[in-house]
Image (cartoon, rainbow, N blue to C red; front, side):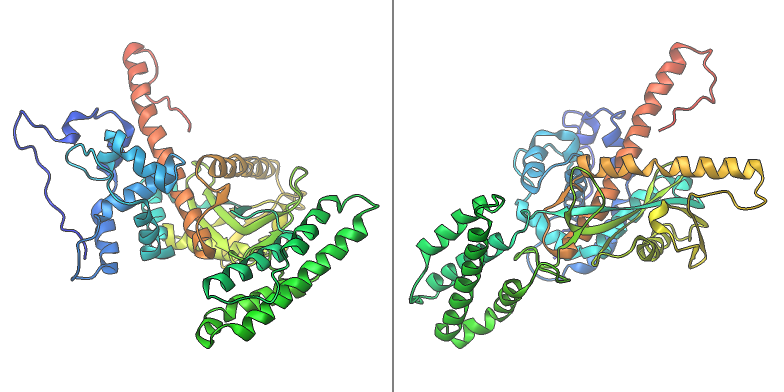
Length: 440
């Protein structure tokens, strides 16, 4: 059941509210007063029942999600830091300073699952709308990146070893006595993999890997014989996954790289320091002049960049309620001139008969296109896009959208802070022209 929203007002001059004690010039307080919290409460209210125990306030949960992403925190650390920071508490709608944690960190998991991708996309839409006309530009910049999943570097040895250990745990949990556990043999096979790059021990490492796959297959078949029908039905998908992993070869397509994240795929982006990345491809759409993110889409398959352009522009239209006239991209999008009415601009030789002013404008566009590269770097290093810790492909979508929303909010906070600095600078030096501006 959704929590009732109570009115917060000052009870007396001896007991001011939390908002009245805080610095009104603080950007986070200004952002808290600017965001349309009532819109979140009305939109997300449909996910709650009329009966049952009252849930945590919607503003509290949305505020914690945004604070977590803006300040690069985890679920546990953002809840712990909330107790110590009065501005965070005011941002989440508290009328008085609280001394206890607002919720259990797992409540953030359930709230993300409750609102889903559509709810988080609504949050991104609200953050883009905060920038007004800056988010309504006719020209956008589009690029793709890789959102890596929280998995270890996959090898056949690791996957086979994990299958064997899972079979051991399943047998112990259901009281199944295995004919043989192969502990010593598995340990010797794992040790043999340590020298697989040594030319003299490479064959022994390959033999050990084949033996581990044989052992894993024996354990799977024995469990299928001895487990009850109910447990076999529960583990049917896992056993099919295990068999698929044990059968896959080096040159196969759609390989499994992780047992707990089977949807992960491999991408080669041509980086010198990291040849392969494992996760999901993500498209980021940014307005050309002001750098507001108006689209962020995770792709379930490793699409060609030109094919990934259409869903990115469709989401941009859903967020800004207008389709961009031009999309500026790099040469990885070759083969697409228009996408659903949006002109795709790629760098290249000037067209025959193109005037010098038009050529200069095109060069300026492509120089501005490079601005999305540091934005993606900021998303990765400061807004939790470097590695996704959320479960499944839905977790990839939610994490990407929250990172884009956090970028927009931090951009708004910087603009608010620079406004006061610029005002103070103008007061101290009146000769500065009033129309001078600071470019973000």
